[in-house]
Amino acid sequence: MTYPDATRHYINGQWVVPHSAQRKDIINPADKHVIGQVALGDAVDADAAVAAAHAAFESWSQTSVAERLTLLRKINDGLIARNDELAEAISAEMGAPKVLAHEAQAPSGTQHFAETIRVLENYDFEEKMGSTLVRREPIGVCVLITPWNWPLNQIAVKVAPALAAGCTMVLKPSELAPLDAVIFTQILHDAGVPPGVFNLVQGDGPGVGDALTGHRLVDMVSFTGSTRAGIAISQNAAKTIKRVALELGGKSANILLDDADFAKAVRKSIHTCMNNSGQSCNAPTRMFVPAARYAEVKALAAETVAQISFGNPGDDPVIGPIANAAQFARVTSLIETAQVEGAELIAGDSAKPAGLEGYYVSPTIFGRVTHDMTIAREEVFGPVLSILTYDSMDEAIAMANDTPYGLSGYVWGSPEKAKAVAARLRTGMVHLNGAGLDTAAPFGGYKMSGNGREWGVYGLEEFLEIKSVYGGAA
Image 1 (cartoon, rainbow, N blue to C red):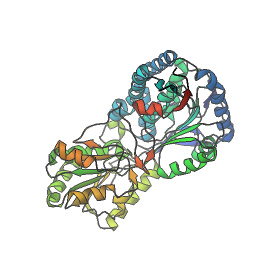
Image 2: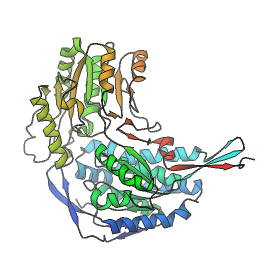
Image 3: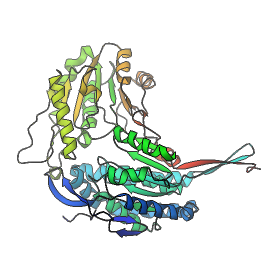
Image 4: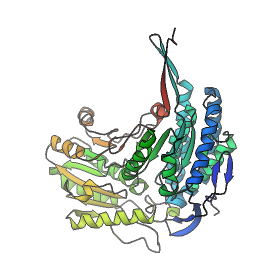
């Protein structure tokens, strides 16, 4: 298959040759084969993209809601039409299995554009407060930096509301998974996005990211990725007092109450944890169960994980490879550390599927994990679940909250008990009894899991400034 060309940038409505000649190989994690190269842009490229976005802001920010809706609908049509192409690129660049790529990863783009369209159709950018007219206006030039684990999802969840708000932008996708961003950019170009409104610069953090996040003409940075990188971006952006919206790491607790349906809860929780090879920031990676029922949970976990296939994405297993070499090394290292620290290995085999040479880690479950173990404290970002026990609900909640992260949480049990526990969890989101995500609801976390919110109306408002026009309501 011929993959998109990621060796050029898209600046001011045109595909351009990068200022820097540096490139990086794009590796298919399923077999470690090189499937292309990506440009490693530099500060000159970043400056050109920001200048284009800055020049386009005056006109784009003054467009009507109707004009922006027309454009968003055209983009959404393009995403639907090219879903399979996007899915194949995502599968190749980060290892998503066939069904996951075609039915979840790629469709997430249109999912967020459709929701943004719905929000924009009903959003009031002005309101009266006494004699004052309060206006919500586009914040300005936005830098959008996206990760490799859900690449199109994170692009769409930033670009759609930024366009809807009337902002202009520069997107820097992950250099490890840049192919879907090229197709996405082609879709925007074909839809008629005006020159300079959307710009794409390929590259890594040191080469392009630093130049973008510290640029004096940038008004906002929206970043999804590691907490470590989020801290560095915040420090760089602080020099010009930019707004910074961060969606970072997580170590989500999953509490099974004594009256939960354990067979359903364990089975569903493990599949949720292992989805996308465990490479989701909101994965329920810490399962808390009553100590008296540990043996039951252990048996259910072993039975469930034995039915989870993993292997070549083209064979459509439940789990594909880890997305890249660096993440593979981290995951395998943390698995080894857990064994050294005395966690009980319930399931997991270091052997790769026969005949495959990619970055494969079998679904792994550790039991009798104690709260102080590394595997219970650090985000693994791989197909690894830790099972901890508790003797009282207060103990379970205390352990769940004793983490620097606060992205998501999961509770299983009778509705009233589950809602009472949810109210005590220090997280931005909580799933009750297996409830899924809601595109209209805010997505984001507490503490070192980030700040700000994405999705729906809350995602749109991240890209808006508030202006009080005194006497304007008269």
